[in-house]
Image (cartoon, rainbow, N blue to C red):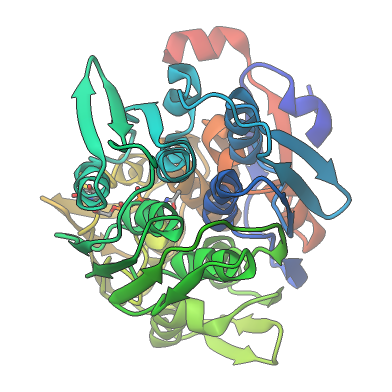
Length: 441
Ligand code: UD1
């Protein structure tokens, strides 16, 4: 049964059927960055005024974050080009387990809740498909700002002691440059008494985007995008109108779509500085890349093997490791890919092998020997970016690839199949045969 994209959001077990082997051409639009939008939404808890966020991608994760803010007493309204958030009536500092469990990023609420209410109770987010994902650094930093933090029965309770319920600025050294910890602590410090210095902070563009919103709200933040971020707390923050940066991971996925189909695509908007390592690796692999101010044109013909090691920004992003592996599975020669960020982020290897990829594993390293042709097969997306990797492999494979696990894909890519179809791909969202789904489960 063939479904429209809208129908398919509501049906059980949708899957993508991809007829591979088509050349792509034309232009792909990049949506706003999911990972930025999620943290910017949490930052709205820091003020009683309205925050208008533009360029917010229409994703299930964004809806889940909206639910979280509503559960705390906030209002969330969708507008033509984004969302309006108001935290004037925040009356609850306890985040529901179900929402944190379904969206890890909703743990971000702990920083602004604590700064604004002097108290926050947020369930531990736990691990996910790609790793255990601890929040030790977040907790350590909140303690350095004067919070008393206890973890009992799977819930983090943070309280600011004393009468004013205001956090106090402090020095924090992060043992690893965690993106989430840096963001949580920037939000907490924005309303603290005095100066906070975060050392070994994450350098990711989403951290810089958060600083941009905080500055627009009246916060005093310096050094975002460097390893030392200094925040001088202010009495109150005000409303703002702010546009989310383009999603660098979606842009990278589209660049890889051009490369894996040996096609020519223009992708916009792209901020090339956000994708330096990815652009360099694609050039090393044989692609021609041209930036024209807003967009990036990618031309691919022959693809050669390259080696990759995932690292914090500006190193090669872990979120593009799986999609890049799909490309290298079709390259000439053997590539060595090492995943250094998350301990369980190579589950797509087995699925790519089902499509004929020649990959040998050793610990967190994959040796990928390119094959002349992948072949279509039923495959499972095991997490968000692994699902994108399967779609890319399906674009290049001979025959039909069926990708299951769209609950992951729809969390991070807005209308992926519609966008790819608009440049010549042949992807349909279909209803899975329930009998086959049960057998697989
Ligand atoms: C964010 C992104 C995610 C991306 C990741 C790395 C969001 C919503 N998600 O996740 O898409 O893959 O950055 O770029 O923005 N760590 C610790 N202790 C801690 C915190 C982290 O050891 O207290 C480790 C993690 O286990 C991991 C590494 O640090 O190995 C990076 O994690 P982190 O930067 O925190 O990732 P997230 O913010 O969760």
